[in-house]
Length: 93
Image 1 (cartoon, helix red, strand yellow):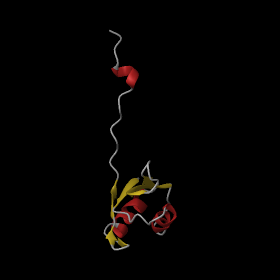
Image 2 (tube, rainbow, N blue to C red):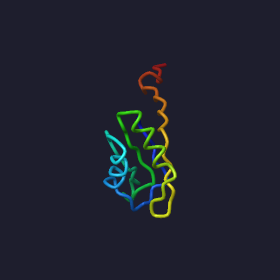
Image 3 (cartoon, rainbow, N blue to C red):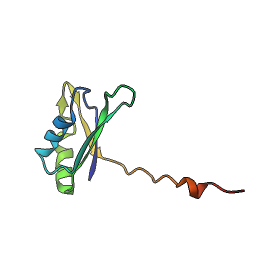
């Protein structure tokens, strides 16, 4: 299950985020979204946990937890709608 982690302190590293979630269960991947221009954290990231039970426990345990005086918001990530293929939408009129 893919989780969205919002309200991350700009000082939290991927290693720290990974460690928080690994205390609860197995983590498949962990990514903090970075600003392309500055390379700094945008304040949110994604954590994938292969076991739904672990993911649900992580949401319960970490949603609202304070890190650097900021309350984390953790929830199931919404699936992004698939973008149509450019070849399928163009016409050769």
